[in-house]
Image 1: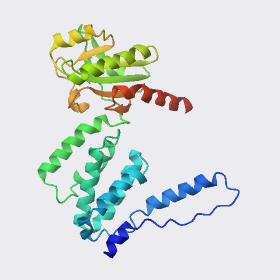
Image 2: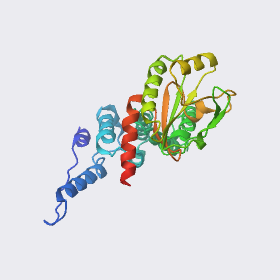
Image 3: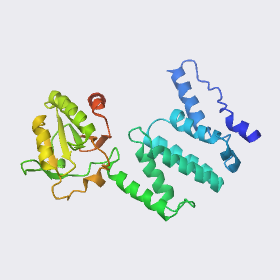
Image 4: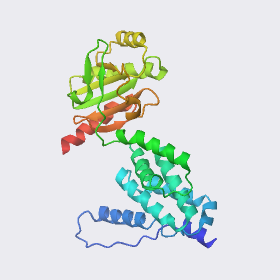
Length: 294
């Protein structure tokens, strides 16, 4: 009971004092309080005692830590996730629980970019054989998931694609000149695509002369249906398909559903992935504004 109560005890944050003439003293105080709370968040948890895992408090504490304490940044989250995993090594079952929780938490997160933390943790623990509970099947599945995610993580250069359009003309992604490239994977018989692709085109019509291009990849092989949809909706952007199945785009971009949309910057770096059509305009506006400030 004492250990459980200790887990529930908030971090005792000391009072930070600065000279009266310190610039932005209140902001500095809040920063010091935040850092202290984060750095000492796990002080009251005895990671050597796996009996704590029979309560709901460890899961609650992990959830609160990653949702509310750590800055929503892949580097910060990776650092803190590794820190708590290392602390949990004091007990094999605690270590198992924390590694399983954190890898699953970031793999299934709906927040864009969190898959990088999953990849980092999987490579550090599962793929280096530190997970005693993981059999060959688990390791194979995690390895396959890491392999599919690594090429398309935010911040990576987008894998190049060279594909034909409806007239048999070749287009290569790396040679497209634009400030932003919207890379859309879709197919005309997908119910969601039927709604979203026309919406994407309506947006494209308003920005096509402002450095934004669309590289739209047809993911199937029913050529007549594809061409018909293009004609009916006047999709006069770059329409391409992998006629000979040479590009391996499904694995390179982790395409398991459609539509799947990525946004690339002028250097072909992935800056957004699996983004909804309705979010694209605000995302690009925000990114442009930030780049203007630099």
